[in-house]
Length: 264
Image (cartoon, rainbow, N blue to C red; front, top):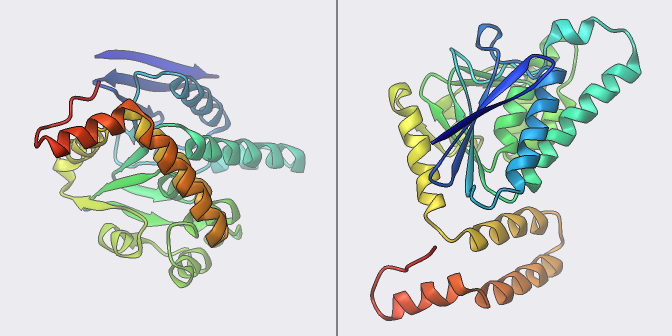
């Protein structure tokens, strides 16, 4: 296992890598791991590095302490009255979310405690999410007079329109079971089993051929933004290209020969 830390202006994010899985841990447990400007920049830079690392097959984003992420640091936001400052901060956060979407590797959120506002956005942006049974989710900006517009982009791409509207207009919390029911998370497990369940999911994906997983993630995101015809055209090209890879040849041969595939 290798372990490093990435920091910007004191925002230290821990990175652990083992067996093709990179585990990224958000900092600031004493303040519910807020997405400060420094954390946003540091996390973005770290993900840029992981994108270029062919040994990494899956990324897990987790956090220490009682919470996953409480969203933006409200004290930091209120420290400035400059609209350009606010625009820049939210733009950098939006760029971070898009970096997660465009990352070649699948990203799994491991969620304990609260995930609110931009923290809920982070969960919705990740490709997959596993939550502890005591986790709670909210797009709570409206309770402060601020509609969660940027979190809405990610939430409405995961949750059906009326469920998303309820979250965004009321700011109410939903529990982990409800989050699973509306599609915000994939799986809910006992709190004490959260890390193990997330690791098991990551290992399952990491055991698959990286070339196919990377192509699949790119296709999933691109086809959702297309009309039906264009989506099928993209999917057809992806299938055809995937068929030419050694991973696909080995997988099909193994199936025909009734053995386990030997992927590298």
